[in-house]
Length: 410
Ligand code: AMP
View 1 (cartoon, rainbow, N blue to C red):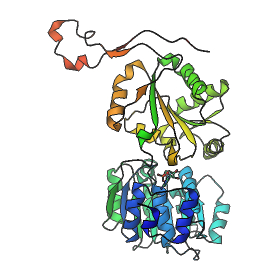
View 2: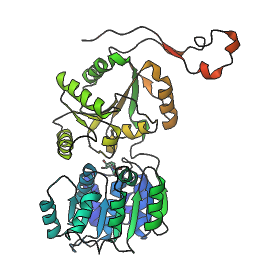
View 3: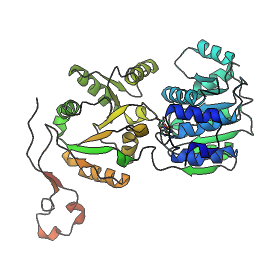
View 4: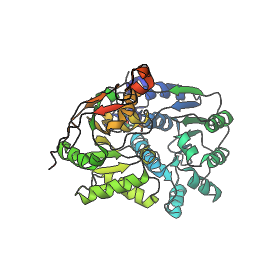
């Protein structure tokens, strides 16, 4: 199936070709024709599925770009995502001359007001500032015919749900509403019930890039050797842009600092940073001035930077399903990528769960400093007495590893 078969306007097709998309992703294939019928849609899809272009193409095709009044509104949880969506929209709208304005907190209100005064046919932004602009009388949504709630569950997590409802109340009732959310907690379901007209549901399980196209390995490493092994990974792989995942905000700062001290320019991104710091970190990474971005899962959600060659799971994710969201950040749009996970000897169960949940086989890799000995379950260790030999629970909870270490640090 090609974009041509989706019955798009020549200007849109030309722009898509220039961006370099050769064929539609699953969500684009399914959502674009459905949306063209004007129905409401609930999409359970992640970053990486191509959802932004799916609703972007729909919006650009269905608004009048010569009319400088907001006809489409996209609400997103973060400023980064708002900026990313705007960039993608502008590319798709290149030959339509659509004016897209981004509205988010932490930046100059007067500049954003000015942009709105100049006229916008599409507005993308975060709920707090959008509501502020409505209350100031700068933003009028009376002609918004398409409203997208992107990453709705995350907007809920961040406390934006009331703002979202107040904003929706300012838009025409007969609008078309699209809601994207990775999970469907009750408040989101209720929001959908209240504000959507018999929505269609669309679940997209696979990412734009199939995970099996990404080389995935793990390195067995003792806790105290994690940092030196990371340095050796960087040395042996010589990666371009690398996204390093850690579990905590504190861990992100610490790792970025230590990398910096070791001569690797790195920045951390997490929820405790001011908007300015987050922006400059993302900017440095996007431009390739800083090759290493250390991120927590929450902060990394929605980050889409082209050219990420490596994903390093410095800490394994808490939830096995999060693994594929992390890894899906590399190898976008046909590029090749690699994901490496640091696994500690007592994390056999975590690694097994990750492989099972994501339907993957992750190969072991040797890096100087890692544990090189064999890793196996030792059933006898917890069952010294034959009376307990049928205690399966215990049998499967003890793991031993060989005690050989590669000491080949440089
Ligand atoms: P999203 O799921 O919207 O965050 O998009 C994920 C990535 O997929 C972005 O980098 C897009 O540029 C890219 N993308 C979107 N549609 C396509 C397509 N049809 N072919 C290749 N890459 C795409």
